[in-house]
Length: 115
Length: 114
Image (tube, rainbow over all chains, first blue to last red; front, side):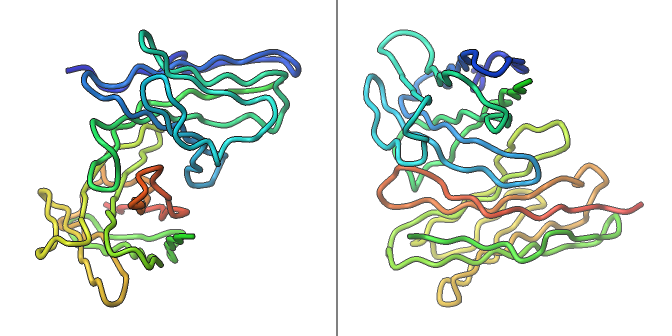
């Protein structure tokens, strides 16, 4: 059973470009979470999705950021018009059921670097 | 809002000794979960151990055990017989009853010395 798959592993963008980060949850998992980790900091919650629905996006900036988890295919975190402050590691996690009585399985993360 | 605190930015331990990493939380919810994750220098997040608020016994997973003191709102991670490969960042996390997220502490950098 493959784990949570994130790609790309590393992504370099210039200021003003778009970044698209992909996450395929573990098989059978319908709950997906995105987290951001700035250097030397802990993980900060961004958004929680179930298939085709955004459940909680309270941690996501209102501008430029969006997320989706379509019926078919991976979850996508999209950052438009990237700025240097968006440089961070973005982690996706999945679970088979809702928290808090389930552990989250994390992907290896996507390291976004904005030049 | 729930809050989770790790007061030790860095810890050092000798190989083969035990070490305790502290974690405290603040909540008024009766139902919640507590988690510990390890993040080695390679960056991935590795699940270590889970404790539910209604669990009667402290969780154990191999060399990892969770010292859960509900009244004190603490969930300390104990690593027995430390190994060099245990050197990593360790994060405590709190799971809300609403199910929206895990809230992570700021982490403790553990260094195991030979």
